[in-house]
Length: 442
Image (cartoon, rainbow, N blue to C red; front, side):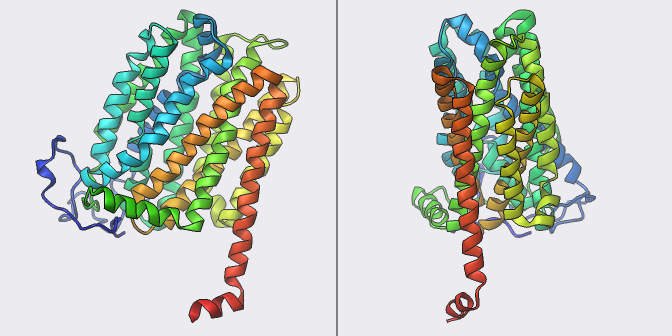
């Protein structure tokens, strides 16, 4: 597969950088152990190591990013703050990620995907080991913001790395595995923090997830194959700005960014607030049991990994319609006061969200012909802004009017996804019409 270009001149001789040496290099002689220079695919040497490495990166990313989410009721009690105030420990991390993902993706175009992911992982894990010792809410929010900024170097760089190193026909499946790592990370992080917090308080919960991320970082560094198709590009702000402008003028990319943001608004609202609902009457569940609820993330692992097959059968828009319908049904079920119905609702919300996210993010990587890191970064920025908005608005709604208000905000976001997808279907039909083809030919 040809390398991604940014539209800027190719720069060589990057060894003068202050970054340490990293395995990203331009096209080079074929590795003896890797006889598939045209791109990795299942069954080829290096594909399994690459998949496991990025699975570990995805696991660490989500485990760290949402490490406080399952602990929000305990943090509220520990610092004597409201749900809305405690929710900033999540929103600060996701908001910082949204702000920094674009500039860090630009650095990855110059210094390399694996180098950027490595530095981001090291800093994020280091901060993760400091977070449990925050003396007050202000320090906790500040450290979480720094952690979110560090994590920003991983998602877009990983997407660009996969787009460059994997054959196009295997791309949706490869990205699905990375997203599956996200879902496992979200599940295991919340599960570990929940039970550790029940045994030793929320600080012990945060320390446990920091140690989990440390183990994932070690696996990532040992397993990730060097990039074979990366070409360093200019770091000129003007060049980056031109590339970003091209992406922002692409109607399809804009629709995909909107879909990612709205899906994540739903997910952020639901999973930021669900702990408060389950710790209150009539459920009164313990912190460990609430953490165990996040085992439902396993459903997201399956649905995201299956996204490639779903797109092959139903098409991209058909897969999105199915994902959004599943999510809406789950939201309606969650309104019940039956714990079994709530759990089933969370299963459907999780399955729909992860399938929709995998489809939309893979479509971004395939749509962008130049500056893939910037294209993925813009998607990630929109996605995590949606998470910040969903978490904050969902918590404020719950504090004001209960779970039904949180579900109402999530359903509005679902309606937004439906509207964008319907509009995309109409545009596609118009472009296939004979008149449109005649005009395009002229």
